[in-house]
Image 1 (cartoon, rainbow, N blue to C red):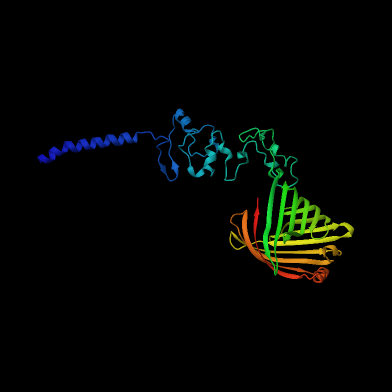
Image 2 (cartoon, rainbow, N blue to C red):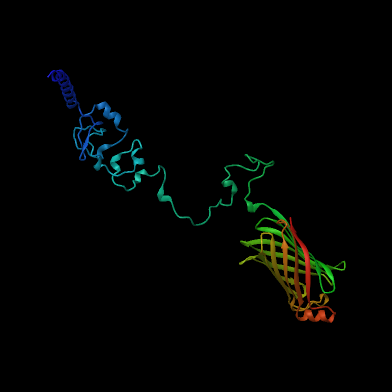
Length: 371
């Protein structure tokens, strides 16, 4: 009985504390920031006007956001039905000064286009190039070769790559030739100087045997580009060596045909009504990056006889060869090979009358280089 009497004051004190706590909790006002959500509805109480102003984003139009309670001031998050909020990109909603009332739906807004851009003026590529398309100064912002970070001495203006002048010399064949009963040295070279569109071309080909120039052909041509990889050539040809010299007008084409055949075709017009046609082609087959097999063929056709030089009309001569070269580098390559030469028609008849062979197999070894 005494124990129960001692516990009674403790029980009364605990009941008093619980009663005071419940009463205080019941009298506490529910703010917009601490409202509880029950079944999709949020109970709200009016917020202070200054708190509402701080919680709203600057320039935001909340007219399109629905509220359950008419007493909730604009900018307050209390009383908001989150299910009624329209689906809009968050990046656009975060931009100050943007009216959210215009952001209904998920379709892109035309008003969100970049300022100053006229999309109506955009059109597909096509039509003629502008008048200054070939003028490098239209895009150089006033810079020349003697002004700016890469200045060079002298009043030199900027130029496009195909306006610069370049030059090169190619010794395509410089070889020692072994025939059935003789040795000779043959050469085939080409040099050019100018731009990509117009350039001077010099070609030289010949044979030297027993210390004497046997047959030589030298051409001075003006080349003009007519298409990618193709040039027209117009100029003069001069024949020398054994027999009288001959001069010709020359006109032809040279370039890279489909399937990577290098083609050289030239027609000639000489004195006394002489005509000639020369066709040449070669192909480079890369066995490796440095080992290259090169087939080559050439034919010569003449319109009339030239007995002084032992040339008959029709198909006069032909050469078919095969060379294997090793490129030490791109500019220097030794090679070995074999070729078959032949004379045809009246030219063969003249060769037999002089005791010469009409066909022959030759072994060659030489050097190809350019600079």
